[in-house]
Length: 264
Image 1 (cartoon, rainbow, N blue to C red):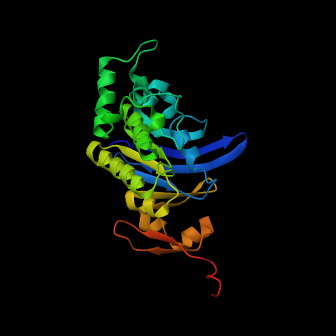
Image 2: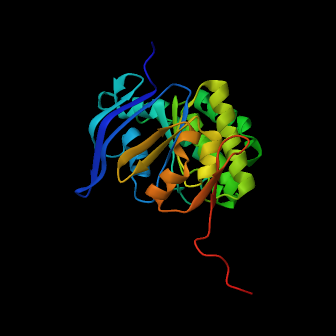
Image 3: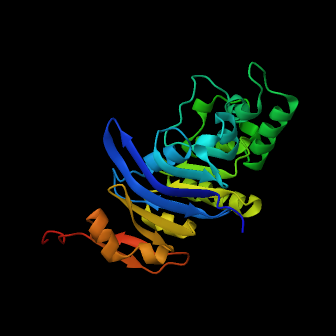
């Protein structure tokens, strides 16, 4: 039996002495798409930062069976790529140069990009239909185009695990679909493992194989979207009044007004 892509046991994280995660257990199979949901402050982004090795933790995080702490920083970056909510982009940077940053884990110290690295970056741009933007400053692109470039940089790392922190939060519904369909296509074609966080519960349920509901730093529910997106669980942990309706690809979560409209 092969090792899980990500295996987390008793994960605990404190930020500035404030406990954020209180003992999270989570296993993600190779090629699986798991989306972490939960109210603001539940610890979703902190969980992703711990998996990527960007924040101290106690407990265990294993990537393909190897403890995260036993991997060099370079090796971690070859295995795990992250698309943050608001990536920092150096002023004036062109698209190709930004995507080439994803090749950093493969470039020797004090070295520069090889022809292989440049070819890999161009291949990713072609794959994401971004070749025509290679020489454009990133700042001149639309929100949807930038999001695809952020994804291109992550894919240029050739990771086995892709972490997406609210990948559609700044996009309109059309661009949300474009980005998520692209990620799902890459996952199915290449066996990429995806761990994401999302606020839009209906979209989360449409694309993920499994949902993990995080609340107050603990896993409150873990399972297929239909077992996690229930009116009772969402009322309890989001304090929200919703209706959950059957959809074509997963449950649809519809907010319900607490009070009706004023009399006309």
